[in-house]
Image (cartoon, rainbow, N blue to C red; front, top):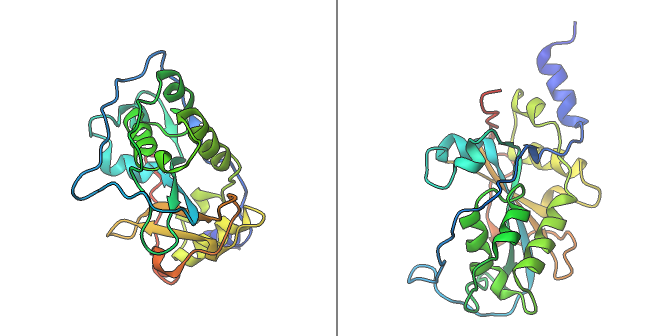
Length: 237
């Protein structure tokens, strides 16, 4: 008899490709009022050239496990909605280790734009933050264009069977290989996997060139060592 562990290992090697994004999401009729997101002493304005980009996605079950009671998390972690991977943001990277941020004064993201993207990035304040910190560093972009660009890249992603992956011994490298196997043209060294201090999957950072094509990630970008143990929180399921 084939063991459950063996079946899970097969699922890792031959992932079932799914769109693990918004399992269930109902857009509200109105959106919360956002606050200004401004540079600070610890997060200063840094208007430098862009050399590449990072597309960051967040594993929502883990986010809600740690932040579900926080103000502003109700839409993502309650309200009858359920998410898999959500879009954190599209980040311009610098030519070296530094990156541009808060390049120009940021307008408020219009409520219709926020509402259109809440089932992709389920936080109005996070949308404002992403525009202020990252979108203002993309010349020629306004909020609608910036979020359409990031949502378009996010919408092309496909995912391995996260439930199967969560039930077998896993490393960051094996997860990256499964993710790459679900996306033509994407290789394991073109992404960085991040985790909590306890080793639970947190985010995946996908490296892109200036034309938004997959590229090998620079060594300095961080992330887990491929041999690092990794766990995936499934939530209440």
